[in-house]
Length: 327
Image 1 (spheres, rainbow, N blue to C red):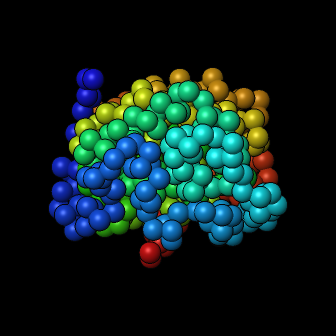
Image 2 (image 1 turned 120 degrees about the vertical axis):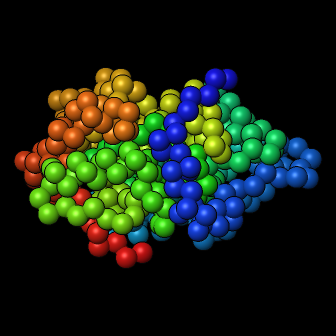
């Protein structure tokens, strides 16, 4: 497969910060003595504390948001679905991660996707990647963190990414975001530059961890949700894009007055999945340094998103919440 390079957001730009992270401990390492794919799939890959095995994570995420009552009610009023019920053993093994780590509201909404042939083939591919010794980002427990930080009833803004960062310690399941103390990559820095110009009082933070946005209802998800270490776009076209299409369609169908920020051609092509009578779609070039100068810094998407939310009776996103993040 031909590998497209994305050097501008690669680990090389953040090498000094990445070295401060013990990234090897957070990323899943491939098994060395497994007798079969089934054995590998059912072996635990993350401590129980890091995954959502019930409604607790979704409810906790919702309690810190501006739509606490709505999200908490939706997350807890229905039991967590069992997507493994009635499946043969090999498929149960393949879908164990989804059952254990996806927020219940998203698990319920996406349930039919997980048994479709494209998704089963995707999971088989990922399993073989790790068994063969490939290092995959983000760590397995973080692949679906976007769902836990932003349960479906909480979604008010959607930001679409392309490929997870492929450097050590960077990707953690939210597009454009990196965990502390990794320095913000160039695309995220350009987003901060736009915010500084677009949103009065915005201060550029000294980190690139966007959890506080996610907890306010900003759904940040990549088109490809995994990547091989140091190989950009290495999991592109394997099936993740179909799951993202389903995510967008679900938000369009089940939510109202959501703002979709679609930056770059790939994201803009998904605009057809959104009901524009119910939602606002804002399009621009990608914030990458390769394209941002062609109009991104003048798009004012962050202030336009808040204006739309307020016009439809919702609280605006506090984009400046990052400066107060002391985690």
